Image (cartoon, rainbow over all chains, first blue to last red):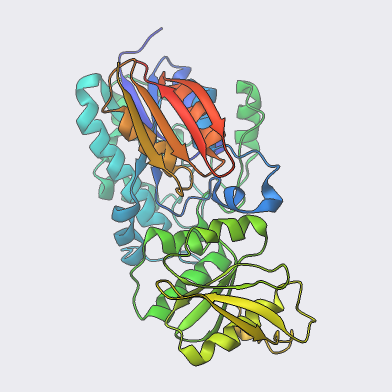
Length: 350
Length: 75
């Protein structure tokens, strides 16, 4: 039977939000999805860049989930607003640079705004796929009320997968949703979700090990901190966070680093940055395109070119020819001796 | 019915989808939008977005360095 109340669901593309929506659809609730793009979402970026992954399906899991559920999906660019969440998290960071609790509060607060704007269309409440104990920072019994309160959602925030472990919310108290048909999942064990997925006929769902955010990844977080330290500032732009996902990052001096493509796909991607960065490329042999990020002195260009040459096919040659392109200047051709493996110090690798 | 163009080159998914979504919200039913992209991810993402939101992808042209996706705006 159709239910006149509507919900907006935070859709990450993972299994939990997929199930949370389907649980409500089973009760006749109309649901639409909302997905927030922070710039750090894993999605398909790396697949788009790297050759090795070309054969993998490049689907966006949030869109895929929405299609499986038969719901509309609103994707919202929150890159600029998200900077304050990342730079000034009230609740701090997790194991890496992941401000998970502040992130969840932020996203639910954005959903609250959406509900207010769309209340006239019948949207009354918000659902998420949160499960108590699922994530060490944001999904704990103590953090559930914090998210509801600080986001401004209060009692219109319903978590269908663990609702029975929490106080009843407005949709339950008002009878819009039958609490008895909600769930009491808890902990990191995924078996109950997998069983429910099977019951609903979902087989090909996404289950990223570290969640859907690059900030939970240690290597990525290390590169982000290195970027800030190298600049003496925690400001960042979209290009910065994209470039942290690409290439081998080598910082031989505090004031600059090299971003060295690891394959032809990454070289092609870095081509798009030629007008913004100094680039170095070996021209006598096959080799990776490299960007110089930071302030490099003219005296250091040769050393940088030697590092670049070490990663090309001419690494064992006595000399290779490199092209150094400084935006707005004539390109330079130089003969360079590639650095040896030992000469590219381990501590330079970010 | 009118035709429109959107430049989403060098943007990585889902930004081309977001730009398309935002542009389409300003268009009328039946309008045509040509989106120029470089991220191959759009070949699956824009059609998926169109299917779930009631729009129609009427052509996908892949050139050497560019992909043009043409969308007819639905209701």
